[in-house]
Image (cartoon, rainbow, N blue to C red; front, side, top):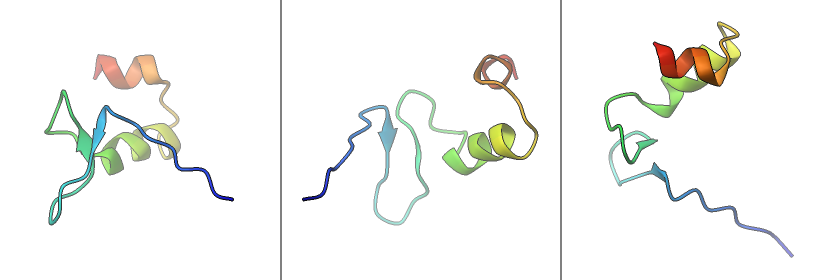
Length: 48
């Protein structure tokens, strides 16, 4: 049995990258790189 997670604040439309529903410009890949690559905390990402 598999479990499906839903994230209503994250949107994926056909032919476009994954993005936040309330802030369409930053892509999820950019947020992930800030968190994983640069080591920023969620609070620091929001501040940028």
